[in-house]
Image 1 (cartoon, one colour):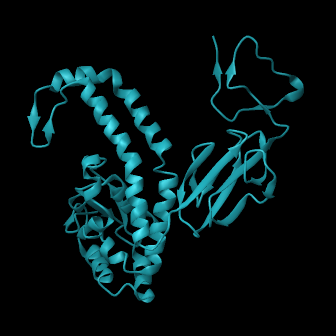
Image 2: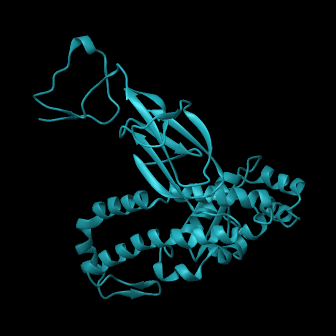
Image 3: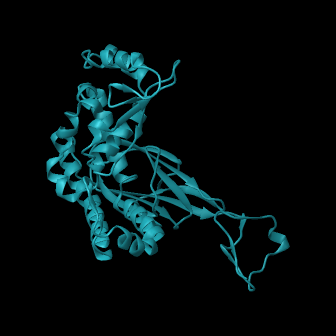
Length: 322
């Protein structure tokens, strides 16, 4: 386990130094980059970098941590210490070029390979549509706020007026709400900065891509293997870039096909399709109920279960009302 590129938390630096030697080769040569693929878990590394870039983690250069098994195995990265991320004031100053120049991030070497650069941009676009969608991240922020909200007045009273090298205690509950507002603003504005970055690297993010499920909650859809966590998503996406959509029915439903609108005509009946979007377009995964008997999410004194429908199944948590 290596920290900051030069300190062995566990083990020694031998294998990591060899990785650096390989990365110092001309990686535009595919035979050299093949050596990198043998040493690095490319998907894990790329997701790690994307997280740092999206969150604008300005302390990333001294907060990198990579690990691999002592024998065999590939290098993987661990996200640590993102307390300097999600700061709206820093958005204009930390574009992708700043992260490329962070030595311990290794991106300045990886990005010299054309195939990897294309992979990096496409995967970043996938994460913006799914992992870092405004709806998903805003919900996560709201959920965590709800968990600690009642504790915040006591926390503020305990640390109010104190200070340290890392900042001062919150002066008020309203200040905390304002800080949460800044994080939500960051999530919205960061996407625009990153789409501009895609343009500078030769990728147009000018297509509006809609992905939906009909009827609601009847199934799920993945975009290039990443879950689209909403019944109706709409966001910018890479123009003329191939992508994969896969539909999976929930228990109690069967997949019918893909449509350009909710309830519209079926254009393809395969669960897994490859698509290239050259203009604004929608893809709805259409499902229909089958004969599986589902238990209602809420069971109360009015609920009736028929023997003829047995066995019953459930596709969500079931609450029994006292």
